[in-house]
Image (cartoon, rainbow, N blue to C red; front, top):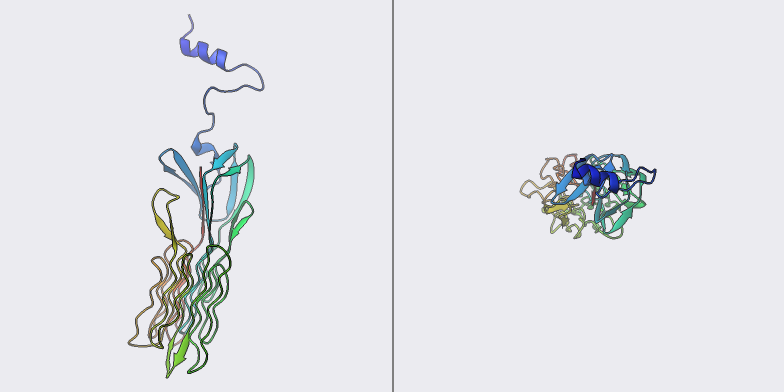
Length: 283
């Protein structure tokens, strides 16, 4: 007598080209291939891309949440503005059909360099705008870069403008009586701070927290501006954004996805490096 399990399989799975299965053939782990890594959160999985690649969908699946973050920009040089954050974009309930999809993940910008774009499935998160060098405006990107410190007594240099959803403008910078202070880079949730005075640079704009991985993480913070003041303090980047340099110290590099580097202090001090972008697909 045949075992009951074998009888069930023989009757439940017809021997035809169009056979069907009484169970899910594709596990959540094998739905996608090509991911940099796959995380697990309860019954859900998260495909992570931290570099360029190709997502292969082995079967149609509903993505319950997707997060795109552009690369963070580098801070400006010589009392430079903070780097702007990469654009922060989300979408829910997207059906991904079987096939291959190109993925681009934005790189973090070097000193005085804008961040790269992150793109997938027709949506692009723009890289952050670079922080301005001394006497230069910040650049528009995702969030705008902070302005470099202006010349003595001149008009404020202007931060880079915002560029759509999930972006904000950078702050202004100015110089006075030999002291120079730059503006902070814009973040996903707030503008970069204008320099409060000629010895204090502006802080980076706030990022945005997201729990797509199962834990709350803040993305896309602006970098702090730089100042040449010996008695000044480094302008904070928002959490993962780089702090600006003071005196002749360089700006600090960012430490979280999509965040901008800090602006450099005086004496040709370099700005900090922005942090790369990322793509998450939860299913």
